[in-house]
Length: 310
Image (cartoon, rainbow, N blue to C red; front, side, top):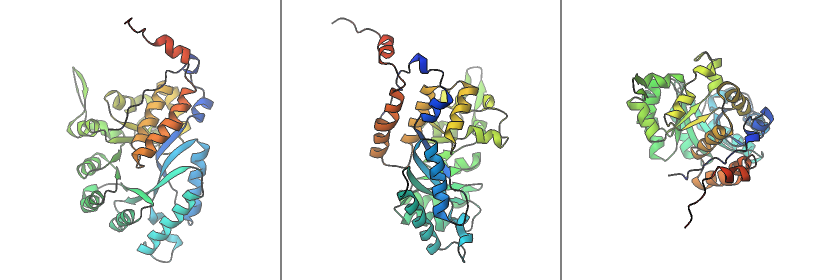
């Protein structure tokens, strides 16, 4: 199990975080989408530039090769997939943001298996994301990924998340309908069979509150299930990009502070597709020190209970 990290005791003067403070925090983006275009290199550089401006220290870029097929004279082929991966990798190596490529495919695409095979065949690719409805139709593809130790994300509706979890999904990208599996009794709210499995096995849930509101899946942050999921013990990571804006929204609407953002950032890093050694290195050398700068040693000492005399 990954080591647990306690949030530094934040100084009272930093409790009411300003937008500038939130912007300065190191961030982890697990689902930064590469926009469609004619040049893979330029598209990757564009998203990396935005992430760098947002102080993202680690990112996983979702790249759908089909979005770049128009730049070639043929439909997606093995040659095209190799070219897309080569261009993306070159762009990553020439940029300062620590990032990985996650090949993505829509469930309705005709070449899901080919894109998954490319994720398996290229060491430069850190994982795979399957997006859309009818995930169960691609059970064979997901089984092949698992057989080859390639982690994958499922991004779909409730039934698709269930199919993905059964197939061994490492992370899920969930909308607000995840709470459809919950039940309410006089004793409180309880997850259902599927969501209990997700929670109890620490399968990370990628949440995008601002995007859920923009998509009219929920009226406001006050109605969003993120706080409930955290209270019930789910492993949550927020945001695809524009993380500072998301942090500010959560701060203003839900009162999230530095302790909550530390928890979300560490959870995202711990559930990335990087190696355990690299995850631990970034947490201990970048994330923790940034939050410790906002703590107060004397305040922390004052809040500790005095030790009993021997």
